[in-house]
Structure formats: structure tokens, C-alpha cells
Image 1 (cartoon, rainbow, N blue to C red):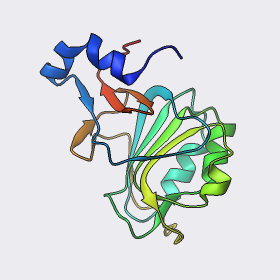
Image 2: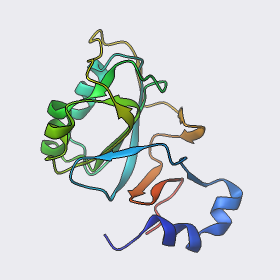
Image 3: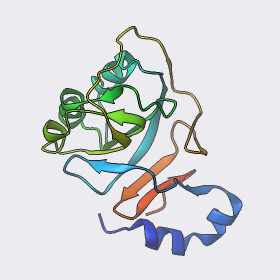
Image 4: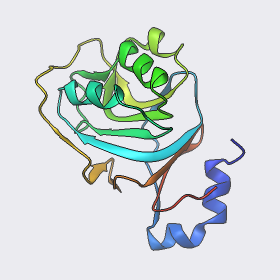
Length: 164
């Protein structure tokens, strides 16, 4: 990938001003082998329950980014090493979790990018409660299914269209 989030921001200042390009606040930590990833967003809204996360990552990712609105919970992990491996095996570019992850040693050897608010050893419930393919709000940024996500060492962009 030859783009960087800094260059994309510089080249698309008009879209930043209009709000069709947004920047997530710098509160996310990187996990997995890929610090730079991009793809079309697929969205989930769950709370301390990762059954829908697993079922989404079991499907072909086709280079997409799974955006998980976990309500910002810091009490239970929504993604761990096994799910990161599923993402890698099924062609996902990355996962963004507005919540926590676990099993980071396992996750960090996977060929996928993962961003999360933090880590916690406690696993989540598996009841299957939540919604998929809906507009989510993570860290004050609205993400629609199909928005394009760009993530690298400098930050995360959410764009209404493919930029680079």
C-alpha cells in the first residue's frame, strides 16, 4: 500500500471540512501483524457479547474491515487470538473494536490488522445479542456499512468513498 493517512488528509482537506472524511480520535491501540490496512466497512453493534463477531469473521472478508461498536466497554474482550486467526484465514483486512481484545500474543502473529481501545483477559458472553450491517458511532465518528476505512500508524480515516 502506497498511501498514508497523513497524505490522504492533506490531499482531501475539502472532504474533511465537509465531513465526508472523518478521523477517529487517537485512542486505539494496534495489534496483529498489519499496522496499515484498508477496506470497505462491515459493521456490528454488540455489548460484551462476541457471538456475532465470530459469525461475521467466519464469512469471506473480501479485504473488508469489520467495525465493531462494542459500546466502548472495557469489561470484556470482543476479539481474541482465535478470532484474529479467523479474520486472517477468511480474507479480512482488519478489525476495529470500540472495546477490548485479549490473547494479544496469539493475535500479534496473525496477518491482519486489529485496533482496539485496550486489552483485558476476561472473555465476553456468547449469547448472539446484537445487530449487524447498521450505522454505528465509534468514538464520536459515524461509520456506515460500505464506508472506506484507512488505518496506519498515524491514525484511522473513515471515508464515504475510496480515496487512494
